[in-house]
Image (cartoon, rainbow, N blue to C red; front, side, top):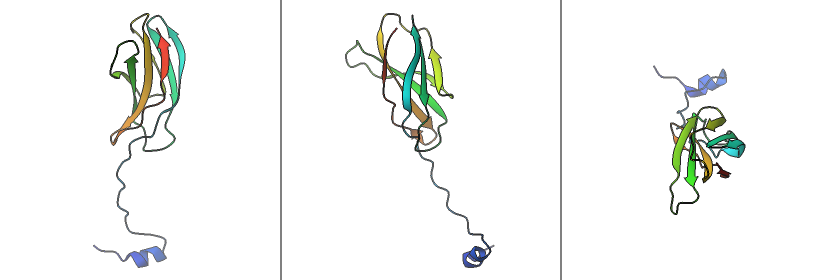
Length: 116
């Protein structure tokens, strides 16, 4: 069945629009440490203001002492806060958060530094 888009517009209707491809989320904002202690850290952040809808957040950690240390995925969160336990005590780490969805990953947040 075919429709005349011109006639449909006269009555306030229109043809189907092509579905836009999904967008990766934007950059996670305002990453903060809310608590840190012996081997434990609690983080909170704000959802991206731009980009596609966020499905989850990937929390990553970098060992500041080791040279050329890679970012390691530590946890995944659905909410905008998390507590990570069983971290090595007495080491200094950087943490960042990356928003993710089925289209991909957003830009990483700014980092925070913690001595656990």
